[in-house]
Structures are given as structure tokens and as C-alpha cells.
Image 1 (cartoon, rainbow over the protein chains, first blue to last red):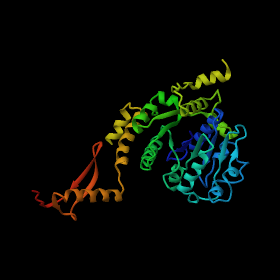
Image 2: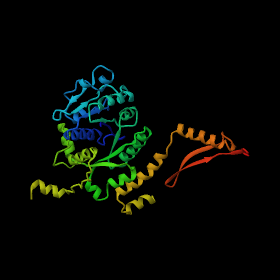
Image 3: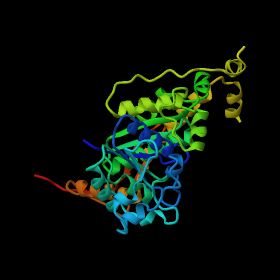
Image 4: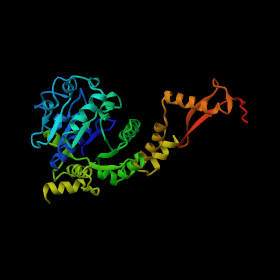
Amino acid sequence: MSEVIVVTSGKGGVGKSTTTANLGVGLAMRGKKVVLIDTDTGLRNLDLLLGLENRIMYDLIDVVEGRVEIKKALVRHKKYENLQLLPTSQVKDKSAVNPADLMALCDELRKEYDFVIIDCPAGIEQGFQTAIAGADTAIVVTMPEVSAVRDADKIIGELGRSEKDNIKLIINRIRPAMVDSGEMMDMDDINDILAIKCIGQVPDDIKVVTSANRGEPVVGESDSQAGKAYENIVGRLLGEDIPFMEFEKEGFFKRLKKAFKF
Amino acid sequence: MLDSIKRIFSSEKSGKVAKRRLQMVLIQDRASVSPEVMGMIRDDIIQVLSKYMIIDKTDMEISLENVDDSVALVANIPVQNMRHHR
């Protein structure tokens, strides 16, 4: 049984591409055959997060316009050969692909892959409608901030209107110390507001930035809280019952102590 | 003015404030309906009511209004005459 998942958010900058990259690598680490599709035409980034920016020959538009076969356009990951990326064009715009194109592409890829994960552009315009067209499941990524949660609600409404009823939520960039002091909404607050099944809460973690710098998603890094959180989400996507982790609540002084070992 | 004084003296944490404000604004967001859909609702209401009464279509008003923290569909429909059913 293969599954087509779209990763979406409405608001930009909440971590759609980071989530897509981490889930892709995480599922590949678990032995699944995975293909990631970047649909953020004109603003492609998934290649960079995966460290594949120098290997791109063809893109989504070449495939859709029939210039090249899908197989030739897929870029294989350096470390996990069961993970492939279909990058998009950096020069075309979002109107170059329509919903029917993407639906046909997903149906084709479904035959060979366990998971097809689509990285959706920000916004609710045509690019969004195209990205969600072929998906069985939508993962909505949000952050514990008012604008991101409001946009997530809008996206959930739009998904419902397009009859995409299997929706899961990931809350990204949580700052546990702020949640503790009551200055940030927690998972329960956001669940109350959005009423969508949450499959992951990912803490804000400098490792997400440093791993992106290197083009190696953080998932599976044992010393990273975010890496562990993504690993848990991957497990939940595979149907495992994994409890939500308690975040380490390291204060500044504790970190300083650790750094200087006193 | 009163609000800002309240804010200075209240100890409500910003996380709770965020949640409360979002719950309010989303009620409005979720209830906002496009003019096309509003037109469809209007036509359907006319169709149903016309079975029982003769209504003045030009003077009728239908809108969604926010009342406190809930939403109401408010309709003002002038009735010209009843249709008599046997």
C-alpha cells in the first residue's frame, strides 16, 4: 500500500521543506522506497536541504511537459538509495503545472514507491491546489504563533473543501522554556483551537539549522531533540504508537555548565 | 485606555492571550462566506419560503453577523402574502 502525502502550511517559513526532507530521509532509513516532489516552482529548496543541488539534470516541468521520462528526472540521494527527489524548476512559475498533471504523476509514482511526499508552496493559490490534488493524506505544519495557527486553520478549511479529509498536524519550532513559563502555546492549546490529530511536536533546535547548512537532514541524529522528534513522527506515520516525548528543559546556565564541564 | 491599564496590571501570560485571541478570530474566519455562496444560500431560502408565502425578493436581506463569540445568520424577509394550502 503506497501513500501520497502533501506537506502544507499556508504560511511560509514554518518548516514545510524541512519537514518534507526529514520525513523523506527518516522513512528511507526505515527501508521504505520514497520519492519527494518539490512543487514550489520558482522557489525550489528541497534539493538544497537534501544536499542534492549539484546533481539536478531535469525537473518537474520537464516531466510534465513530456521532455523527459520521470525516471530520468529523479535524483537519487547520496546516502539512501531508496530515496529519490523530483526537483522543480527554479526559472518557471507555479502555473507551469496543473492539478491534473500532478495527479497523474502521483498515480504513476505510486506504483513503484511506498511513499510519495509532496512539498507544497506557501499560500492558497493555484500552487497549493496543484500540490494537494493527488494526495491521500495532508500534513499541516504550523508553529506556536498566532499567524501560523490562523493560516493553518485556513488551510485545514481549504483541504476540507477539496475533500481531503485525512489531515494530520505537526507543530514545529516549539520553545519548551517559553511553554513552561506560559509565554507560548503548547500542543494542547493548539489541539483545542484546530481540532486536528497531532502527529508530532518538534522543538526549536539549532541542529536543524546546522544540518541544513550541510545538506543533511537532522532526523536520526541521536543528540538532537528535533532529530528524535522527526524519528518519532516517521514511526507514527508507519502506524507505531509512540508517546510524545518530554523536551529537555535545559536552562542557559545548565548549558553553560555543560559546555565548560564544571 | 482601560485595556492598556488592564494589560499592565494583569498577570495573564501571553500564551493564554494568544489562544484566546485565536479562538475569537477563527470563529469569524470560519464563518466568512464568499458572495457566491451567500447568493446560493439566498436563492435556496427564497425557493423554500416561496412554497408557503409570497416574499419581497428585492427588499430581503441576509447576512452573517458576529454576536459576542458566536455567529448568526440574520435574515430580514418581507412577507407580502401567505399562500393558502388546503
